[in-house]
Length: 303
Length: 225
Image 1 (cartoon, each protein chain N blue to C red):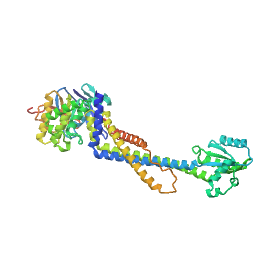
Image 2 (image 1 turned 90 degrees about the vertical axis):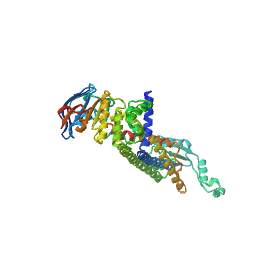
Image 3 (image 1 turned 180 degrees about the vertical axis):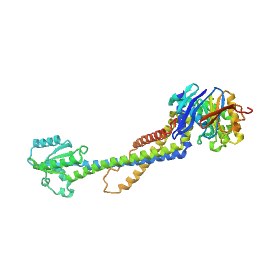
Image 4 (image 1 turned 180 degrees about the horizontal axis):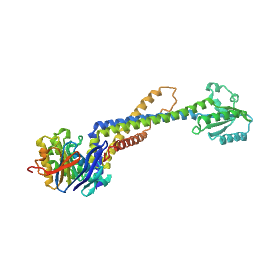
């Protein structure tokens, strides 16, 4: 019974604290919201950057053209060597001369194909090598490019085609984006935590008197903490929803603008609504951490 | 009820607030502690509330040695002490009702019990009509009455008052002292720290005189109580 009474009291006080200190409550929610928006945009940036890099890197493949007289077992043997020597090689597939011709025909304009004898279109068997971008870094990419260049001298290989510059650029971009992403993440997350902590401390400082009185009448630290935690949680929920709404609306506005730009080939999807849960969780976590750390210094019995 | 045995309290910087102070106080007794500013009156109250620990000596409160009190026991000690301060120590963001109720809420009483007992306390001090008011809306006398109502609402066996009339006009000061005397008559042990000798002399009670942290004398204050 007493637990129920106390719990009901804590919830009532947590809610009442918000109405007793509307200014503090507003500042608290806004602080959490701004922090979550910063972190939200960071997440969005990283998500989109990853998609962009994946897209760019997803096109990374090599074509090893075989001599027209090469046998299928010889091609399979080379495919096996490629797969076993390079863990970065995700997939090797053999394509016949016929398949190559079909592919080339598709690349030609329709009006030209209509008047063209298919046999006149050059074609030869080839191995298509798809790289696993998750396993590659810029150093390994360079070594791979060198090794594949040397295949030109191997018997049975006619020519190796790959965009070495494209591979190098992609992995340089990927590496740079990862480093920058980690750095920006750290800065923004630290700034958000500092922002929340400073504001919470100021808010709790303004309520020092109240905490002192509660301690004097015999309140335990837990008795003082729990309503603050509930208050922090409620502020976190409000901030989570508010920041999600702001990020979603801004993203929608941004993407609508960018969609007009033909050169942008990035998939322009909106934040899924399930992300709101992450914002809520982030808001609640920040609210709780802020409440706990802000209160800690005031819950001392002795001076 | 209270035993101070050679209690010394020194603050960083070499300030000695109490210097080997000894006195005792029986259960149900009324005691004035008087002296000029800096005599150590407030320090006695702060030590009894375990807001500070003595540098040396022993303090027994209801046979418990405060020096060996665990920090987790302090809230339970304070629940048995009603405290009144010169600056009232009310929570400005809470109504009169909520300020008084807080003493009972820490005890885990139900809302109904809290409502009943706070209602009685407010009625006793003529504060019922002010129940929904906030402290800044009240006069000094009204605020002190709220502070006293908060101090007695849970029927503590010990009442500590630190300059309870310091910021009140003479009429209100007498009213507050009358309330404390009334509580004493009901069996509550009352310790009042005050420098107001004129007011003290209106009541015939035991009085300890301090100066610079030392006990310089003891008397029965004169008066017609």
